[in-house]
Length: 100
Image (cartoon, rainbow, N blue to C red; front, side, top):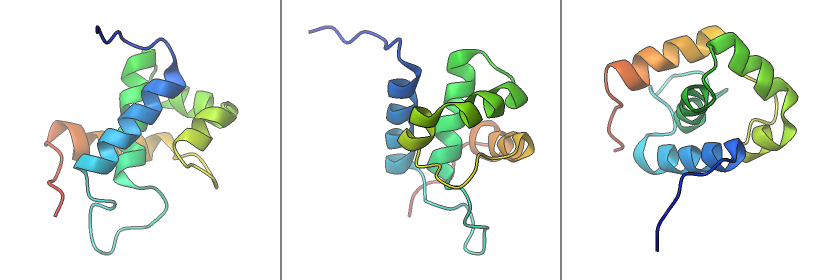
């Protein structure tokens, strides 16, 4: 059976979130702020690439997209675009830390 790419952004984000949960520690540092998890940020960064958006555009989309926020368990608020920029540097450019 062939596995095709999904055209659903929500399904894509949910899968990226599950991959992040399996591969990343919940938080990057022991004393990190506990507002967003690394898997949530990873999924948002993957979605940014999937949709071809910039950081500010992604934040605007996520704010308006209830189903997507629910899929990523973003209940309180959406990360600021600068949070996503920093997460990109930490998670994608330097290589993700290993889960311990």
